[in-house]
Image (cartoon, rainbow, N blue to C red):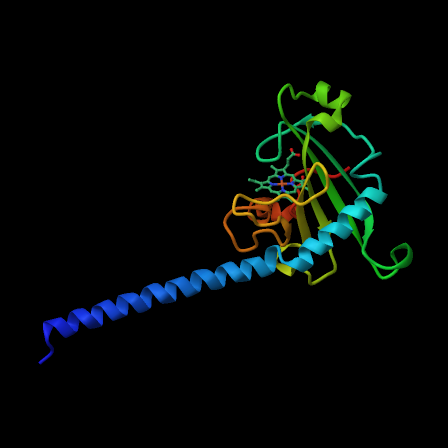
Length: 196
Ligand code: HEC
């Protein structure tokens, strides 16, 4: 006959195993996401991408102006979106680099922000630069092969509240973040705005 105490023990062991297994699954999911999202390779790529954008006059000192317009969450009160083609990485003059379309969104905010104020002093209100770069076919075939990055105004990478560097297949598989939200417009190649 099975003793009640043994049953309890078996139950406790099962529960413990359950906790361990759930823990494992969560950890697996997390490390998969890290791999997809924001590993060292992605962080390093984001630096090359920033340099390429700087050269093309899309970010940094001497960046070309466009037309600021009223924005919406989560991107900022006033936005400015430009797009172009750049070559990321490579050796001399970009040979061996990856040529692709880049969409750059400058996010403006802070006290006194308005379209007018931003037009007069972009630097003062620039809070973040969010970028989508079309990488080589197969980079992320589930999500249009886009490389996602969020930079601070100075060009260093922004992090999410958990300290994750926002570069790469950002938060792939999660229900929040760049890919999740932009998937709403998957049929338009993940782009909310029509590029002119
Ligand atoms: C909760 C939804 C949401 C999240 C999360 C989000 N975006 Fe967006 N994104 C938008 C919307 C809405 C627009 C269009 C805003 C506009 O210009 O009026 C947009 C526009 C953009 C654009 C300009 C191209 C376009 O789609 O029109 C880029 C680039 C961009 N987002 C990058 C990012 C990056 C990088 C991240 C993650 C760090 C991110 N976004 C996270 C909603 C989101």
